[in-house]
Image: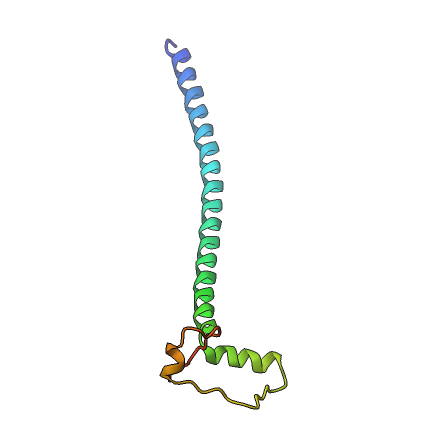
Length: 104
């Protein structure tokens, strides 16, 4: 047999290539799993960010603040005097306090 050395050399190279492809396939599978985990974490963070934006928009709403006040404080604050203001009071620049008005 004249070609035995060449055949064995090619078989060894083929086996080496097969084992290297299995090894790289295993490494890429680990990378794929870690990438999928990162994608899931990113999606969770995006969802949390959406929820935080919704909470922030409710936080800026005065009704939401009133509900929070009713939850955490059992007593109702009664002011003996209600303060009304007019355009002249708004135009007065000497006032130090700012009033927030909710328009419904």
